[in-house]
Amino acid sequence: LGDRRLDKRLIRTAGFLGSAPLAPINQACLDWRSTKAAYRMFDNPKASPAKIHAPHVAATVRRMMAVTVEEEEKTTVLAASDTAFISYNHPNVTGIGPIGKNNDEGRGLVIHSVLVMTTEGAPLGLLHQNIWAREEVPDEGRQEKIERLQQTPIEEKESFKWLLASRDAHQHAPPGCRVVMLCDREGDVYEHIADLMERKDSYVIRARCDRRLAPEENDGNERMHEALAQAQELGTMEVEVPGNGKRKTRIATVGIKVAQVTIKAPQRRGHAKDSCSTEPVTVRLVGATEISTPPEGEAAISWVLVTNLMVPDFEAAKEKVFWYSQRFGIETFHRVLKSGLKVEDCRLETGERLARHLALCSVIAVRLMNVTYLAREKPELPATVAFSEEELEAMHVLTREGVPPKEPPTLKEAVRMVAKLGGHLGRKSDGEPGVTVMWRGWLQLYVAVRFARRLRRAGMINSS
Image (cartoon, rainbow, N blue to C red; front, side, top):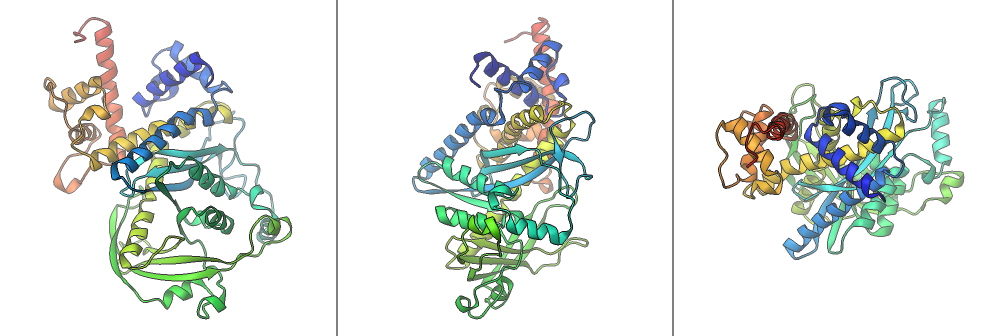
């Protein structure tokens, strides 16, 4: 942050907040002196969100390079790009904006992030994050809005966030590492796709609308869905649909189709027409339509994925569908921010302070996710790669009521101990613990860690 004392304060504050994921700042920091120092840090213009993230982004790139070195060839990583709206409904907050379709649906900040994962879904870290307050929503009718957006250059639209995120991910990608951008339907912006194609960046984006095609180059088909409907089904595969609080995790069986199409540029007027290519773009479509019966009250999966990657056969198509299914990882990241770290309960009184708090909590959230997924991917690693001796001691005493062994447990064993504190029963039918029970267990663990620290300071237990 350009100030040694401020750096130290940032690290110390991160330690406090990471040790008590559900606690407000004053409770997490334990005493008034530490709390006041944290408030000053969040109020300091030197502590910009970008600078807070810089060392984390650098560490993310190193983890991407480590994956590449291990496999000794050009490695693919997935970069999920998505937006979340952070609501701050408490009074007297300045510097925030509307987060709904109009000015009366709550106020807060917008956060757009790029979370990098392995192709198996293990989070490596954030490559990009942008936090801002929206301007007031114009009072206009539907047709007025359409005409305004058709004439507005992409650089002046909120959807420019997709281009900024993809460009940032491209800039940070290390040599020998192919980054595949994953976006949901909101990321299906023609200017975004054209920008990715111009840089030859890989992407898998879920289609938002049934785009128009150039009939002369698509066997007479005029729409994407029409082209997919005429394609032959290559086979079926199973896709895991994760729970989100409203639905339970389930497995869906989907039929796979593939088509190559050339899509037309959408209608643009005025300056908007000058800021984007009007040339058609050739892409591949991968359709994944659920053929199993979904649970009552849930819609069947019907994905149309747009990609510039080669899809020569069924295996390649399955791969793209599986990669897109890993995009749910960034939704988990948002859930950890909101439910795990309770960022919306923060009572800092300006948008600038809240943005710095969000940036710091984002790094803590990724660390929590990383430990959970690393335990699944490399369970036999020693637990010391993710936990301190103090933490391992506390979790062992809490869950096994005995003296910790000299040899550290494996990462899998340690994660299961933390998950047990969070309510995970460990039955065969329960599967591996998820992030939700992990952050619950994390909170319980750090109550014990803090208690042990204070007992040591008071000389009531031996520090050895």
